Amino acid sequence: MAGARADEATASRAQLTAAEDTVRNRSTDWSAWRIDRGVPTDLSPQGVLAFFDRVRVGRDRLLDLEAAERETAAEMVRIGAYEARTRDAIVATGGSTVDAGALGDAVVDLSREVARNRAVQARRDELGQTVARCDRAITDVLGEGLGAAAMRADLATGDTERWRSDAAAAEDEITEIEDARVVAIETRVKAIHERDAIAASSDIARLELEHAALTEEIQSAVDEWRVLSLAEGLIKSTLEKFERERQPEVLLHASRLFEAITAGEYTRLYRKLGEDSGLSITTRDSRVVGPEALSQGTREQLYLCVRLGLAADHAARTSSLPLVMDDVLVNFDPDRASAVAEVLCDFSRDHQVLLFTCHPHTVDLLRSIQPVCGHFAMQRFGAGGEWVASA
Image (cartoon, rainbow, N blue to C red; front, side, top):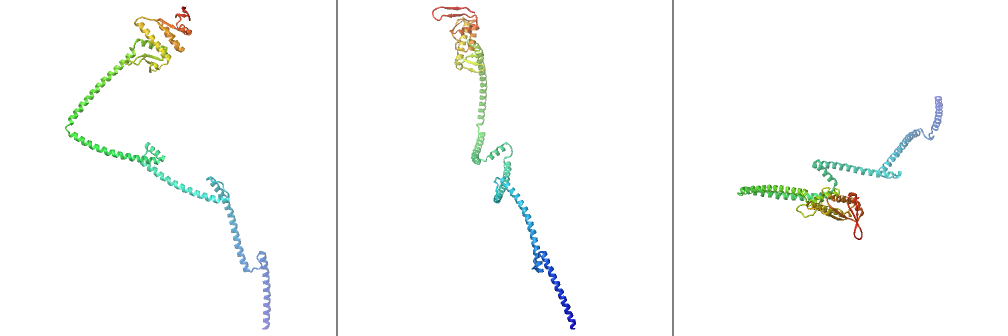
């Protein structure tokens, strides 16, 4: 019995030794594994499991950190682009370029400005709708056409003070019109009563007879006025014809001579019948002027023509007398002097003309027009002279 127990003890010790060897081997392997894996050697198996749990958590956090860093980098790129667009927006809205530190404040200011602009735009849209409603209401009231366009143009001026003044004036005018309307109604009623009273009166027949008599009298006066107007027209036309055709021969001769001398500038000389206004002169363009409207030289030419007309008329009625003149060409310009000289030479064909002059060029002018005229050169001092034969 004792031997069997000794054998069991020996076997147990052998198993114990083997188990201890196994434990030592496992402990050695465990230490090597921990060293190989970088696990702290003082950790128990449970501690290793906890360590691995912490490592897994750390690895997950590291992965999360790396993802966060990548997202941060991408966000920084987006932030840079946003800052660039923000700076462009600030500059586009009239602001100045800002640095990164002041960009936030600028963005806040820009946001506030945008908010204000949005509020202004909303107010503008609201006012636009109000204006559209007012325009439709104005169109309903004013209608279309030139009058409506004029009133719209007046409304566009915005002159409210004048409108108030016009409205007050219109109210005063309306009051006056209403008062006048009341007076007119009262007057009409009174007139109706008077008309009814007249219609019922016995004076109607008498008034109708008076009206008929007055109408006949007016018609008679109109007939008489027509006869007198016709007579007046005939008398005026007769006087005009007499003035035009039956003027004295003196003025007829003078008119022809004056027209020739003035080269047709003045066409007729006459005196109006029944007036003591002197001569009247008709111009080329049918105007009538008096001698006072002529220049000094033209008046002298007019006087000369009247003298020649008198001489011609006297010669026609009695006998021709010599016409004596002294330097009548001295105040005329060369053209008018030549015209007067031609008239005198033509006049000398039927009348004796004696022209005294101290200007040799006057003699030359006359003899160039009428070479056969006589020329008597007088001495400056003493008696006697020299007859110069005609050319």
